[in-house]
Length: 79
Image: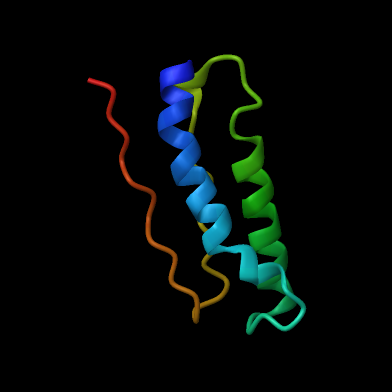
């Protein structure tokens, strides 16, 4: 579990930083997109609230703000 978490946390944190601006009042996105990114960020924070880390899964990246391009999550391999 610790090895898995240590592989995921830096990536998760980078996506939180990447989407910080979506929660600013003057972000150039709709209220719906702000809400979508709020939920996405909550899901990122809650990723490790499970007992079996082999079940870890990235949340879906919102697509409701076409002016924001978020790269797909990288593949993490433990082999």
